[in-house]
Amino acid sequence: MSVRFWGTRGSIPVSGPQFSRYGGNTICVEIRCGDEVLIFDAGSGIPPAGLAMKAEGVNQVDLFFSHCHYDHIIGLPYFKPLYNHECAVKIWSGHLAGTMTTREIVCEFMRPPWFPVDPKICRAHLAYGDFRAGDVLEPRRNVTVRTGNLNHPGGAIGYRVEWGGRSVAMITDTEHEPGTLDPEVLKLIENADLFIYDCCYTDEEMEIFKGFGHSTWQQAIRLARAANVKEIAFIHHAPWRTDAELEEIDRLAAAEFPHAFSARDGQVLEYVASDG
Image (cartoon, rainbow, N blue to C red; front, top):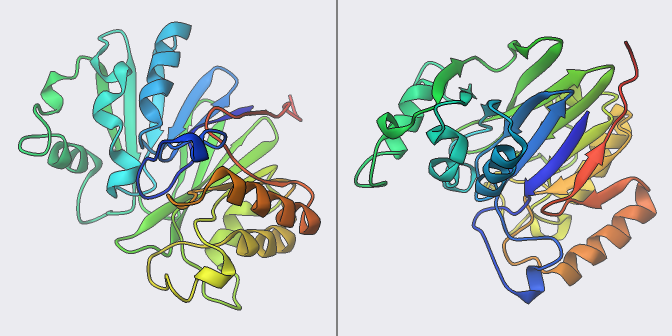
């Protein structure tokens, strides 16, 4: 089982020398379960993911939206597999269950005047999956994806991927209530090998950004301790957060939880299957 971070930035993409180490692409995380490819969110990190898939000959992928705010979908129209007739792409969502289907979400933002063309231009075998928070999905053989509601304006979905006795939880975007641990998040991350968490802010900044729908690296550690998590990857870095500031967060976090770090664009983590 492997995890590759194609985009780890929050809100908007950024560039410049002060962001060169951790990267500036918005959220896109690839999780591979053997030969099966799952991608979570389609931020500006998904175009390079698509190019890498093409070079490797990957022609089947499941893409899961946490939600459809701009920074999490902006890269979708530039995802090369969508235009390859040899590829099969299934797009999943559950944050607007009962309000909009996944197909409607994609057709709504990928059309004039927001985009030059609509999804009819796509040549891939395109399918859509709709679910409700709490559903357990089996997108591929022996791959289990558990889902849960997150606390974010307009709604968002947290995911837990299980395969080969390993588990990775993808939790973005969510806001915590000070002094409490979200039971939905705790359920998704319990005993996880890797806990990927929205750490846009610090505890000191939360009062300023109350209601924005994001959390902190300190809260990630509190959750991880309570849920017996093995490793934490901080994502959704604030767009103004420089490499130097993220390095300082890493230093402070390591003193409290040795296996905690700020994820960076291009980083790959490997987990050997523990069963079968």
